[in-house]
Amino acid sequence: MDYRSTRSRRETDLITAVMQGLAADGGLFVPVEIPHFDPESIRGDTLPEIAAELLLPFFSGSPLEPELRDICDDALDFAVPLTRLQARPDPLAVLELFHGPTAAFKDVGARFLAAVMERSLPLLDDDGRPVTILVATSGDTGGAVAAAFHGRSRLRVGVLFPKGQVSARQQHQLTCWGGNVRSFEVEGSFDDCQALAKAAFRDPVLSRRHRFSSANSINLGRLLPQVAYHAASSLWHWREAGMAAGYIVPTGNLGNGLACVWARAMGMPIREIVFAINSNLTIPEYLATGKWRPRPSVRTLASAMDVGDPSNMERLFDMLPDFGELRATVQAYPVDDDAIRAQIRQDDERFGRVWCPHTATGFRVYDQLAQAQRAGRPWIVCATAHPAKFESITESLTGHAVPVPDSLQALLALSAEHVTVRAEVDALAVELDRWNAEFE
Ligand SMILES: *Cc1c(COP(=O)(O)O)cnc(C)c1O
Image 1 (cartoon, rainbow, N blue to C red):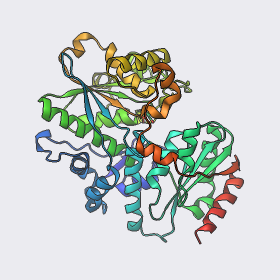
Image 2: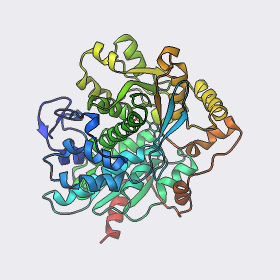
Image 3: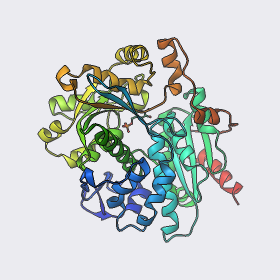
């Protein structure tokens, strides 16, 4: 399989697309064609088995092809259960994507990316020096990336987080790793962290010395495994129920949403696709009016979906350039903070389940579908984070605590350390060089 940019026809291979992240022309990498399967032909049962079958065309012809099965077993090594909430009259299930090391769905993409990069490095014709992933984070992404890359050979991670602007639990997950992960507390905002990472990438001396790479959510290596869990769950449901389910996908930058669209385009038994969006209205307004108006993000309770200019829309426009066709393919509905709160309270009573604020948008959208859209028709809502990560929101709504999952508990028990830096590239350079020297 070859890959091209959404902005030009020039083609490249899988390893280049993954190591580079973003195309040189600023576009996003997409496969030159989306492979198609007959669902009857898929033999695998588990997520890693199904992922290895479905992702094979994306790896075909790459030196990574023989490693695919191993990559899937390595990266997708935690449970992704599809749990039934009600059977009748309207079948409803939840796809729990939050059983990874940092209890959020970003673990899936970050672990797959790390597994691919680790196996790509020995295949490159280079000097064998380690690559440093620089990740600016407002909280969650940094933890998932650090966890996914921790202990992997020839890869290092520098996490940049804003001082005093992440929760205590988040900070712990960013700073408890050691070894090939170092956490930098930046004296500034999240925007300063991003600007600092960009400045470091642009500095030719620094970027050559540390061989910077990124782990952004637009990286193909994060998108492909997300296609796999939508596909696997749709097959599990279809094999058991004998019919396709509709999907409700909480999404902001559209990584999770686009992956579902790709899974259906690959022939998977997925009926409708509905994006659940918070109060960042760019996508729902576009689908209602046909006008694409990116804007600054607004803060909501579902903070990991606070995106006003969703990057992956460029891949969706590339796939479906015709507005009418796009509108026939996906729906999107917004959910505001009051509705998120009401949904968390209601579903604790209705199902005895506590949702994180992102997941709550999905269930709100389900409840607001027209009765005809629900009657007798199965739906799956994707749950993107464990509620224990958002206890400051959920506990006051439900009046009770949620047990912290073992994986998260284990992280919280580790000791933590970080280095504080000014938000200037020279200050970061000194610390990176000092860190480098520790490995010599
Ligand atoms: C990142 C994130 C999302 C949104 O992911 P997209 O890539 O925008 O689809 C949703 N929920 C949680 C918990 C997240 O961390």
